[in-house]
Image (tube, helix red, strand yellow):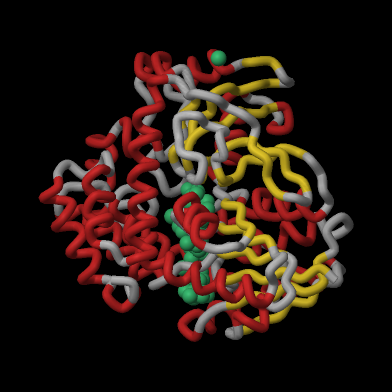
Length: 431
Ligand code: NAD
Ligand code: G6P
Ligand code: MN
Ligand code: MN
């Protein structure tokens, strides 16, 4: 029978995943689902795990949910391992958001120094998980959702033998966003994506197969904005967006509108709290709901989190591999010549055909000059971040933060780096 292990099972997103497996049960008959967590997450795992069991019972499907702190038991002979864990929990995220702000730099969980810090904590853990997979389930697919998703996936592909595909809900969110802006059913919209995780551009947008990129760009320029719950929805300037001629992802605002976004983040930090602090409250509310024994479906309040459509992305990807579907999904995958302006061994985010052998990206060639430089510099930052995270290499870490476009100077990069290392000592065995 089909066995799935989900690392970080206590996540409040787990009901999304369960809903996705229930919906696809006829095609994707999951027999055993192991939700794995650590001691600190045990209470959350119990609450959300019991909701998962009620959802499955209510839907009348036959999935056995196992709640465990034993990762090796969960991984052994698994067909798919999915990851949705957060090393250091929300307190570490909040520190990541606050350190850069001290120096007037964007403090965000995946972009800039915050994403760097999250990567440094996560890399030792993902490498450990991969050792278990290599030993106990060498044929398993790793479906990585853990952020920074592109960087973590690239780490796995460069440094382990594990077959891995990275996921993000931004591309699917952009498809929904475009459909909403155009006022059409989402199934009529498709988009060609090129770039990196949280730095992906929609290069062409289609409605019923017809190129409507210019129409969408025009709408974006007259204030019809699209964003995620966790990214301030600042509208694009009409001149800027029409000169770009592409559909930027919400996270592009951190690079293209840095000053405005920094003001927004600073203002929020002083009033509502950082996003991590806000999420703490949302989570409390969610887990209160999850405890209610009468609840046996995914509650709509989960939409307050940034990860909406996670299950669409994850479960449909697993379904496409399992059933050898040869359909197209947007994934984080090894470049291998897809984008000629980037090295072969790095991970990109793009459309790919999915079959039982994995993800086969659709050829892109060279990208336009206007996006090439930003994409290359952020990728260089990511490669250095991986080098630093795997080897505890301070020189690589300092260069990573210095080349990151959101950090203004080498001096500030050093101050931020030293704060990050100091405040994360416990989670950075590699340094
Ligand atoms: P969360 O804080 O709820 O953490 C999920 C669980 O991970 C917790 O129950 C925690 O105890 C557990 N955990 C921590 N360290 C662990 C370890 N070493 N092994 C096993 N479990 C461990 O986090 P969340 O808000 O649900 O987010 C989970 C992850 O998914 C984060 O990394 C987040 O950035 C990521 N995420 C990704 C996307 C995407 O688009 N790729 C979207 C949303 C969230
Ligand atoms: C989406 C992203 C994720 C991100 C999450 C944050 O925007 O694709 O990668 O981590 O939402 O959501 P949260 O509710 O935790 O702030
Ligand atoms: Mn994402
Ligand atoms: Mn064109």
